[in-house]
Length: 116
Image (cartoon, rainbow, N blue to C red; front, side, top):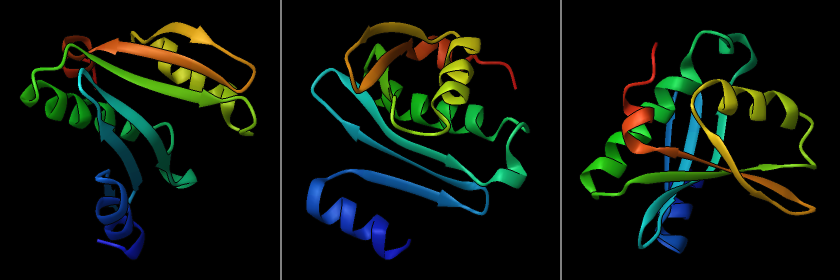
């Protein structure tokens, strides 16, 4: 684990999972798993690493007996459009939006069975 991962867990009770391809960062709320960040290194994009990360988070959500996973796409991020399109291509639905974020949801079952 990196110092960042240790810090997020110690300070906020949030989980950061890192590997050679990138990382994902989530937090557990009373009724859902919330995706804080997902990052895939540029050389590994388009090889379904993001989908794998989403399936792994779905497994955690299933253990917690959650029905949904929620994420937000920051409108100030240069990759916003690409990230939003990835979510929408993979059974996520837009649940709401404000001036800063577009919020998406996916059922845990849909995330677990996402094609590779």
